[in-house]
Length: 406
Image 1: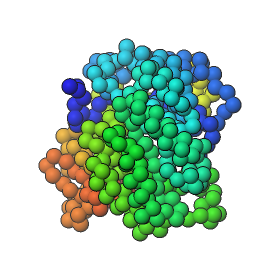
Image 2: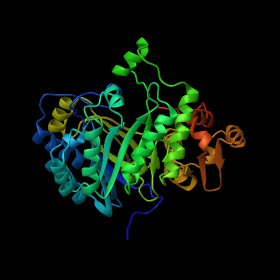
Image 3: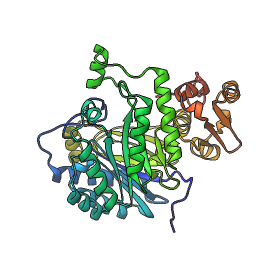
């Protein structure tokens, strides 16, 4: 029996560990390569910052449904740090009976013994950054592991944790749809009874090595038609294996969805601690956006001096909150729940979106509008950014003066 309420947006804790062994050429996350980490100081600082935000959030009605250790490479953390943070989280909030505790891990940055220590610390779900099952592709992506190491790490994770997910990156240069179909089938076979896949199309982000390489013309991404074909292969194969998409890039067996990420996509509150971490907290009835200092050493000194390293703690205007709920909710195949949208934003969804655009997009087969929810169709998922741009009024919300975008 589980006390996790299906459809509830939940309440989560995100912990950011910013350190990596090397910087992947496609990565624009807040990650850093350093020679040495003072684990004791960082552990103490994470606990202090968690206590600060727990006091802000308040315990009343706060049922903690998920904890997510992200990065960076959280599998480089000491298991004792994970254990200490989970002990604090359980004492500061009321934990769900089926509290989900996810740790991101990279093959090559963890072994079976350390996995056992993380399990004993309280981790019950591992998200493994495999990224490809082809050695040439792994080398192109700048990964430190090869296929054999990835499979060994996955085997260890599956034997030790009740829930395991893997990440793969597709739409790589020259990526053929049939080659991707075979690679994806391998991944689905390897997962066996474990039911979650995160499948991301390769994107080129400014500030990354890949951006410089792509800008020089060293390689090219697949053309739009090829990228669409790759996306269709992704949907076909995951659905065939019983892991249909529940979000644009995420696929799971029913009941195996990542509960922590659902907190984000359904508009739930979550605390974010650690360098560069973001949070969303409703305080005194007002939703607030928080952000921590990105630079690890600066974050550490600020927490030690002030109990937190907050660089942003701003109330969200009604229009800003509404647009965020729409943007995140349409990523889900379940769509935007209209009752939840009204409760969290303070206004009805039908009164926020552009009525003419809604009618046109529905007639075009890109949106499905029902009394309960607004959702993107399969075709609509391919043009999600365009849907948002069309639906959100360009002049924002005159009531509070906040622009619809951030």
